[in-house]
Image 1 (cartoon, helix red, strand yellow):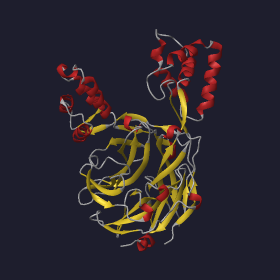
Image 2 (cartoon, one colour; image 1 turned 180 degrees about the horizontal axis):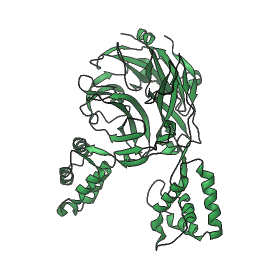
Image 3 (cartoon, rainbow, N blue to C red; image 1 turned 120 degrees about the vertical axis):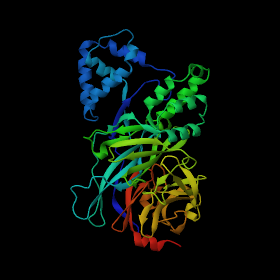
Image 4 (cartoon, rainbow, N blue to C red; image 1 turned 30 degrees about the vertical axis):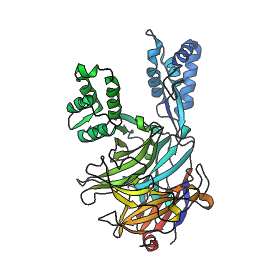
Length: 485
């Protein structure tokens, strides 16, 4: 068996930055703000200097961010309550004020890793024998906070993978309200331990599908005897935080895919959105779109979450619940199997397991698929992306962690109708962290979050040392022949 390592890849670009609200003194908590003192200093700057300062700031940063003036004015509005009595200040002074509460963040300033490849929704303008793919990337910046970025690549003609140049500036999404089903919200309330008379009354006031605004309206209708109890404020706030954990991220139509970055929004992902595994997905109704699972990290705990999109421009972000949605590395099957949604998950922190769902958001365990068995996976094992369908079975790319915390890639073959049945597995790794793949931000790691099959070849983008992106490929027939039965 020959695994081909291709001479192409991506490396972190420190100039891929976003601008975001910066509140000095509140970087890690809201216990002390220095906003008042800073505003006073901005107000004290003489008029004859403000215009030049505003012009210099918009000139210096305007090419690095879309509509930097609008962002400065938006951030000025955030702190405008600190001005006290109504103060009539010029647009230029507001620009300087907003810039004083804005900071750049290099989304991949530390590392770029753990890619996932899917067929691109736009296949126009290609030569015969070519396929355009979208690649989701884990970008790691200051504070080891992860975001989800995207790149594009062209496969073919022949055995060729070419990354398309990534574009600047980066755009952040507009964040809108997401929506819930009543069954999913009830399951999330139960999982969060919020079942009480307050949650019962709130749930009773909601329709089968609803938004955060509907939750707020239901809260206002709570009986006063409930809402005024000593501990009610804490319970109500917990329900509100749960409700706003789903949201919709929308990018401007003028953006290219590589300009879009999904950054943490919900409380449970405030310290990172990690290892997105995307798949072109067919639901029970036969509708085809894209879904991705990722790991949210709040600084203490992790939680699997779901992304749903039809075009990789508008993204619906959901919570996942159930006993199978508690660990890292969920990967969705691309279609229902036996009338059920299925996913690969992890159980016990070390086994590849199967999860099932009737709605795609509430997941239950359906059995262990593969525990660590070979020396190269003696510490733990897990999937490396959604299963790939072939006439012979589901090919599942996997990672194994061996001695010295060494991450290598292998594969399983699962039965098409009953994926708990393992038909074959690679006795030795197909890619290992050796030679120039050994060193990086995290040494001895090769890792992937998903590959694609094109004309009988599996293409696998890989993260190398949690630092950069490479690409490998292998013939499906050769991989199947290498598997032990």
